[in-house]
Image (cartoon, rainbow, N blue to C red; front, top):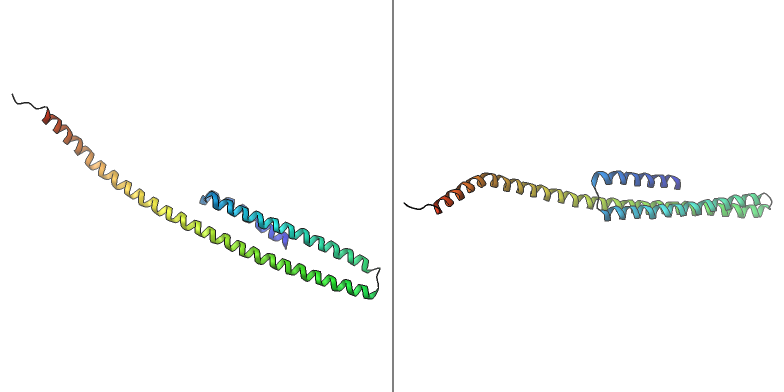
Length: 160
């Protein structure tokens, strides 16, 4: 289960890198996302090592069970089920925290998308304004040049 979660995190990181080229996320959003993924990945590795350690201990206990009395066997079985419940509880806790973290990442991505959309709208408005200014310049610049030329000829005009 933990290995599957780590694979999901790896795929999520790869998907984020692909999306970064497409959406051009801000460096702060990208670094926050990568840091969050790194933290979750480190937690998963830590939980996996703890789980493997607990499994090895339970296997060691099982080997010693074969050399013990029935009462000792019963104690070991009870401890083993306790360990399994602890591991299941820890795994469930990890899944809940991962879900919360992924939800927060999705909310941050949505906020970044809204900012990008506002920037695109402002760029479109600026582009429209520049087109209007260009059309005005195209219409009035030649007339202005003719008027200045006429005015200069008028200043140089001397009656005979």
